[in-house]
Image 1: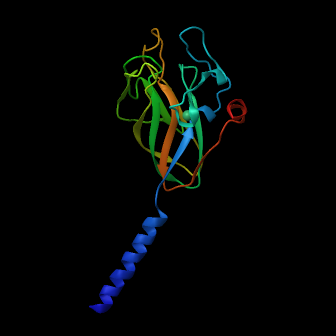
Image 2: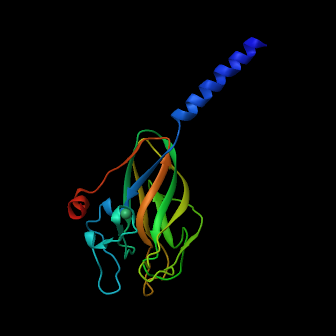
Image 3: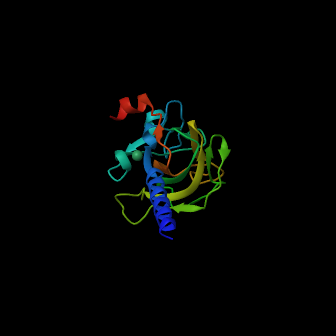
Length: 196
Ligand SMILES: [Ca+2]
């Protein structure tokens, strides 16, 4: 009996050590550091392009977000993973002053390594603060599969008529990936040069 107990104790210690090793880390990847060159946005007046899609905002993570997005301005995160792994994806988004909008796999497409993912519908709205009409909120998208090496996550306007009858997207501040794998984003040097 005593032997059995000590075996159980050793097993329990091994299991807790494994749990510590597998502890997940939350990584924050900024939309303003994705490659923006060549992207064409959708503004109220005129169409911002490239780094012009970035706006400063004190409430945004890292002080910036990308907005005025349309179908010609997909935001592409390139994420390196050290292993095949599952990551829980969240996304911090603002209203882009589009009013109340519903986002789902039809109105806002998210692809991981080329495959469209399903996620629970969420909404954005301008909020009550006249000084902060982006009203950033973090929304849970769900679990995604990453492979060892480079992964591509693309967020792009889907089928909607939210900006003067044209398809638009929410403002994107950052994505948050929680995983047991070690993750790193391949960031745009051009964005760093403009913003840092
Ligand atoms: Ca940001």
